[in-house]
Image 1 (tube, helix red, strand yellow):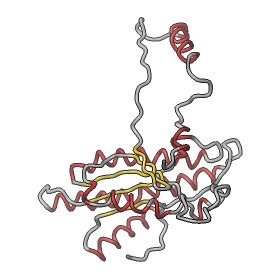
Image 2: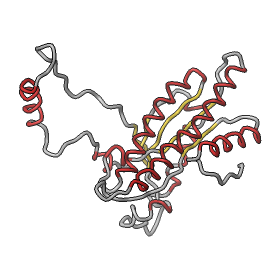
Image 3: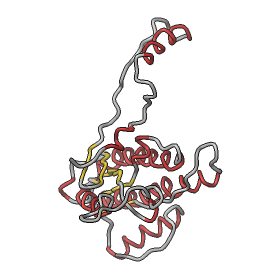
Image 4: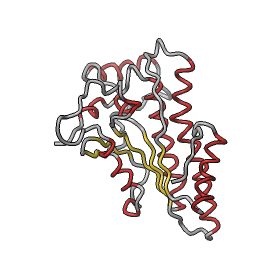
Length: 245
């Protein structure tokens, strides 16, 4: 491995990181983005810096390295006369973006942004032979010590929150075997991998007029939501209950 202690959230340093790898090895094949920090706070107590710092490290950090790796793969493909190259991106999101996190709105927002970045990158780089996927891991690390404080490690066997459950999936997504997997989101922890389906349109209403007015919307949307379970939102809280059977 090539040692680098720079800040991936710094555009120039991220460029230098990719340049260091391509200079040392002659090319770059795999990019795994996993940098992150936590600044836990309820939305009504969060400071501007607590918001900005988390978005900067997570979302901008993912963009920065992706931007320069993508340019590298595009240039390699052009130099090869349009031939596809080998490239893999594995980004790190979180179940917090799926389920919501009252004490981590900055973190959940950044992780949701990473998903949008990943699916967009997957579309842009597919023609070059590059795939981009995103995982939502659950692992016991220095960053998550407080988050998983109540989940004690088992007396015997591998900890369900051990990073060893996550690493094999990252390796697989970076391998030639995963060539057909692109723009996908997978949840992984404790000996389990779950493939998350894209959002579906739950209902659709058409105006009987040129455009909606308040009364028509009231007549359509109010009864629709009256029949929905109380408290149900776009958040997919059920993902937090996923576990190995």
